Image 1 (cartoon, one colour):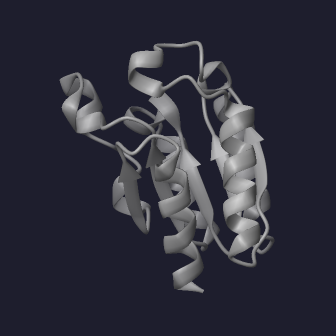
Image 2: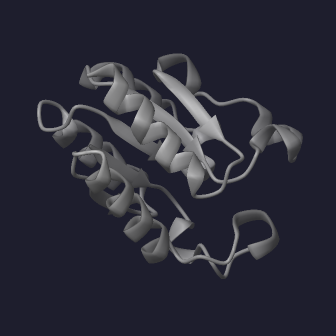
Length: 140
């Protein structure tokens, strides 16, 4: 499985801790890796603040991974390019968010990615990633 983190997630733990928690992205990735290992699958991790790098990584995931847990950050609400890449790669992608985007600002209430994702998990902090990976594993 591939776990992708989009823009500003490298600041998790220091950026708006009341919304995103106090664990760093490295802490979250360690917990994800331990969770995956207990369930018998491995995870690779990728984070970028750049849309093009996220696109390239999605393209490279085609044929290399059984699924992707993807927190696209703010690109969730704006990136038609990421939407089209998810639709094109032919592997399941689960949209992930640490916060409950539907309980926040109205502009966060519409994901352009959701229609091409296998599903979405949001609002459970780091547990959102674990739930997404379990869902992807069940799809195999």
